[in-house]
Image 1 (cartoon, rainbow, N blue to C red):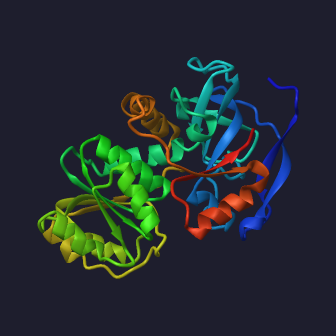
Image 2 (cartoon, rainbow, N blue to C red):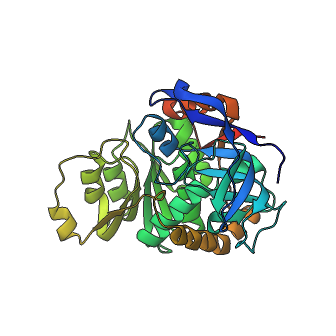
Length: 332
């Protein structure tokens, strides 16, 4: 254990804009019996962090009030009940909060080894997006080889991950983006059809490329008027998985399509799920996805890296909407 009693961290001084993020000193957390204490080298930046900063997404009970849902670093200490990890191991982890700091304690079940060949900043870009995509696309959405998959916001951290994983498991991928630059990036990742939503209607494109059949699985983080349009372009027995509502959580929907097409519209949020659920997801990723990363078949797409003290700049970058892939904080 380090002799340092305090650590640098970034806290939310009050709900508000990016400048509400402020560097501070906090006590170093202690590892509970089931936890691993990680000396953080890098932390991923995610949309839920922005929502938390704005006061719209409070952390779960008993979680750190500090933002940050994914980290990579070195194991500093392990709890008495932890048998897998050792001090000095290079790991990445999904957290319920506290990632914007030099140290964070995490349930050992949510910790994974850093895939061979990845830097700490790359490894910090993995947990939140890969856990989210695996659970929502392959478990809740039950995407199968040979099916057609539509992901909205293909250039986001979630989108770039979903494109690669869906292609790796044999699906045809359609995605929506807001610019030509983002479209090019998604094509390079393997997207079969890219819709620039300012210029094309994704419903029409989806119908065209599937000869009118529609898409089997849709991963949507927009909501709003996309909900009816998702129903329109879904195939019979299609599955729509909702993970965010950037376009609004309320809309008028024609549920007759839900019935006539036998659609499933589900959704989830990861942060509040039980530790055992997150542990199961971690083991599935390690078995099915980590080998693909080590074989360089898929990789995190990196946008920009900011120092911990400039976390506010990272949030500005995310809110501008121009990023392609993951934004990461260099904590080391």
